[in-house]
Length: 153
Image (cartoon, rainbow, N blue to C red; front, side, top):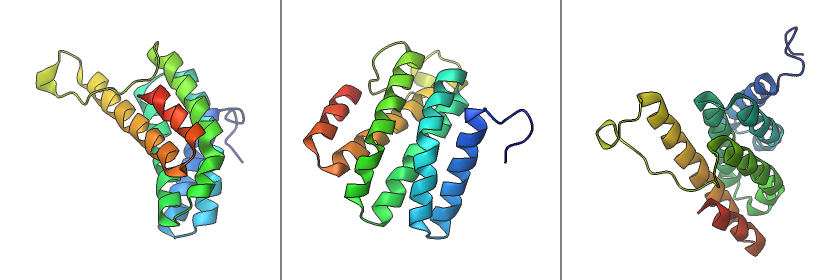
């Protein structure tokens, strides 16, 4: 049960579900990992929209990465289909946070831009997040999921 005052905190619940998913992955308990990441995905999208910060984007990336790894380890392309709606919700949240349609963000170096270091890290996390979403959609092999990839790129 969550600490007092965190009962409705999507961020706390997403962090816990993501951490559980990672622990289950480490123990090779793939069904439990998939379930935990499935719980974390909509919460991460909600957190991203509420907090609009680099830590929220990192959390979203970690959840999506976990989904990808858990299904890759079990060669479960069919199971990935169950995450597409959550990925769509995540992209909608990311679009609102970014203020534009999600698009690939180039990895920047300090020499390439005048952006402060925390903005560079955020751009890198966002690029990796979008790449992972695209990989999951491609891995399902379904044409309608490829349409979601087109929205990313």
